[in-house]
Length: 176
Image (cartoon, rainbow, N blue to C red; front, side):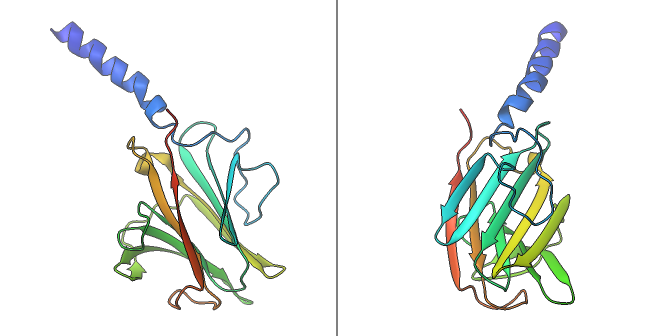
């Protein structure tokens, strides 16, 4: 009986990396610098007038995201929901004097600072009338075997509270 349990435990641990394959791995891990490199992200989707890229790190431990929007204001990506409510929102802006990136929790049609901090790395950059938010976080937070739902949005002001000008949602399907 102990031998069967030991074998089962070993098989479960061997299968865990397969379950974490929710996104295609990047050939080279993206550099988190707020710039949309031409070959950094194996998956890029157009969501209205925003461009979203995402990848699983080569070692399967991190998820990398980048969002580029036609604004000089804030941009955001919300993970875990196709609506604001319940999403873990990464929001930021690049003002003349500082860059701000915050982790927020969606509540109804608003959000507030999150007590859960997940970001491993983050960067934001405004250039040429576009703002680009790039970040990575541990893959284990979103590798539950279900699809990863997310929202993206942007606004026109350099703050974390003004209403969005445009938004969209997307679902990342797990690889089967």
